[in-house]
Image 1: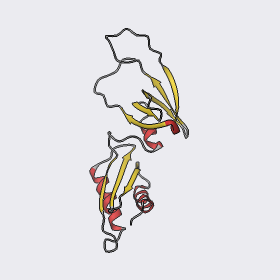
Image 2: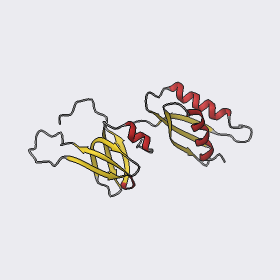
Image 3: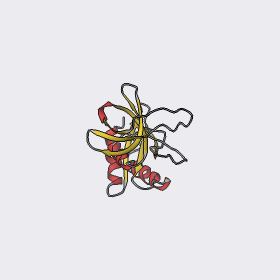
Image 4: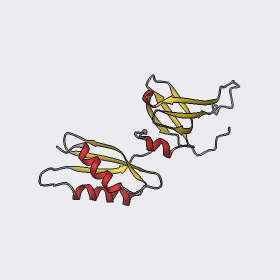
Length: 157
């Protein structure tokens, strides 16, 4: 069976020196390989094809039959690596903590252990409520899932 470590090594070799980076690799028991990429800039279909061809050229199909899918990590997938947090500094994100509590705000800072969010007031014009805003820090080890918030309207501060 193909190993995650081997696939990670091949992908990282191919992406070395570019703004593209590996987010995740899954190898199933029936030899399906899923590779998820991201980029500090743009990630194109051509980038995914190049990585796919590189992986295939370094594996022997006579020894191992496999199915390979290389794609963007996508907006629907949560952040997996620190570099995704760094890429999204200045953007609104939603965090689900291990406790189940949800937090949302503008990602301001990231380090090896925590992230800092600027908490935004709720966008609710019907209810007149007092909301505490400010910055909060969340430990990465306490985060279950983080996703970028996609919005097409500007939010007032």
